[in-house]
Length: 100
Image 1 (cartoon, rainbow, N blue to C red):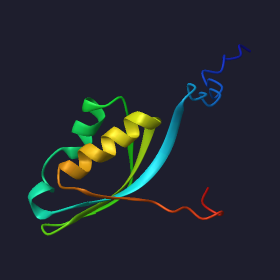
Image 2: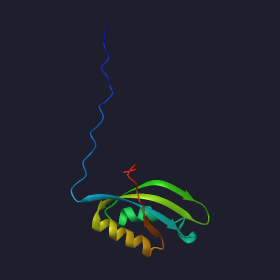
Image 3: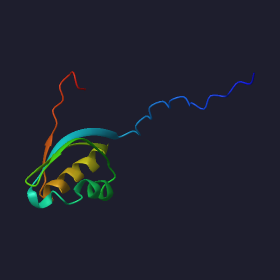
Image 4: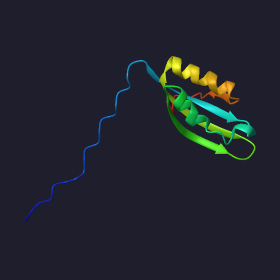
């Protein structure tokens, strides 16, 4: 009887972050005129940042997004300032000991 070789590949080890890269989470609040704009896409293209939407609630009047941003501290700060200039309210997410 012939045996079949498994095609399941072992899981890759979690990739280590390059030195100097950090991760931060922010609550973004969009005013009505910015809800349909691709703000998060622009953020990831204007700055050397990786974005990850962790939670979102959007309607015609307001958009609220919990956004995780990965990158160099200076790039994150520049990106946050850009978001604020674009009319988006940015507040850091406070994680408790159970969430971290």
